[in-house]
Length: 110
Image 1 (tube, rainbow, N blue to C red):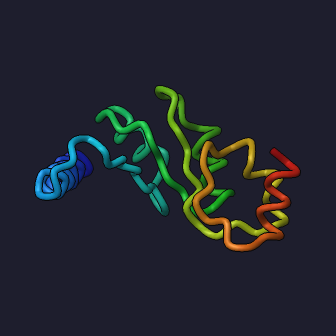
Image 2 (image 1 turned 180 degrees about the vertical axis):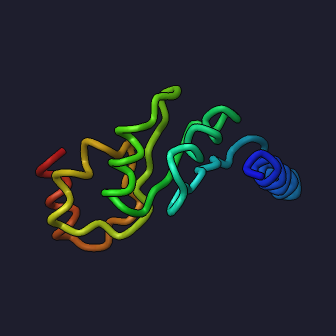
């Protein structure tokens, strides 16, 4: 099921880029929210290298269990200031900075 969905998404992305005259400029981030670590392993096996999570604790559990190739981890959900110290070393990118206070805390920890 994951493989078929991934191929369909990749085709839709390729079609959209072709329509606007762009080639390979979009990045696919596989979001594994509420899915087991086996879903992360499956998308990695299929060549996906960027994985998104919206919860720090769920990502932590998956990262501790995942034993496949190196991935780039994205935090795509709301980040609470009190979870910054835990999140910064876990994620390569944080997409959801929504306040100056949060930004300052990330900068301090990073």
